[in-house]
Image 1 (cartoon, one colour):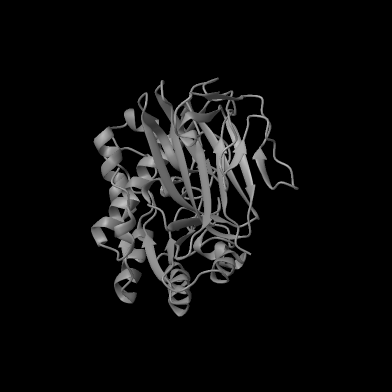
Image 2 (tube, one colour; image 1 turned 90 degrees about the horizontal axis):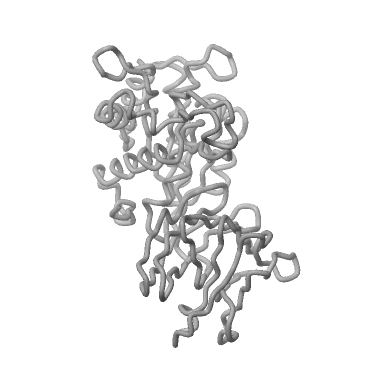
Length: 369
């Protein structure tokens, strides 16, 4: 069953069919299949403009809008603006994946943002935030020929759930145009071995289709000594990575290897200390042996950290003062995991790698940020 929604947000005269009017008190219920998740911080204005879709809007302060949908890929198109005031809106979908980040319009300006989201649990969840957020209209339609990027990796890639923690896979949609969806299967603490043994690769292989992508980044936890995760750089590590490559190719999908992003560890001369060692060489060897595209995120992240320097680079990671973030009242000092700013920049390096490889046709779907 194909479901298409067209929503017109805000008070004022009812919109013409097929648009559905959404008011601040339009709360989600299973019968309707759409609505806001609570309305404590949602308001609305009507600016008396000729175009109903632009004159009416909701102000969704830290609000979530939900719509029930059959599982699949959907193109989401959001119209954002205000006739008399500047706006700034961030829009996330699913488990915190950023599609629109601090998008600004001036007074009287309207912007249309489109992205493709993959629904896997029967519901699309859109979270709004920002200094002056607006939502005028929203269209959700099945994406007929969407390409999906499946991500297999660890905590530096995964969809982190506790703000401001973020994995780079969470931020990747920000760099992609519509018709490319991200399905992030990365999970904290996993290695190339445990990801397979837990059935996580099998879950990807059940869904992946020809011309989709499987991006693979492991290494952080392959170094751990426990038998559930440990691999040898030039032995079992390469053997496990080869399984991902071969299984993707067997289904007509395109594998891409991504060297593990560096930890923030500087020597006395302001240079990054490599904590991955032979795992980087092992992945590069396999890429050459099997002719697999490789994004050297280790090299790219090293250059970024060294360009910033020891102290400034903390802003990319989960370094926080006591009381700075509500979920970390005692603060944090983490040189492995990113906060949103860092994850956005690392995702940008990955997108840069796609462009450098001219990975066809994916490089044509990169946004010029």
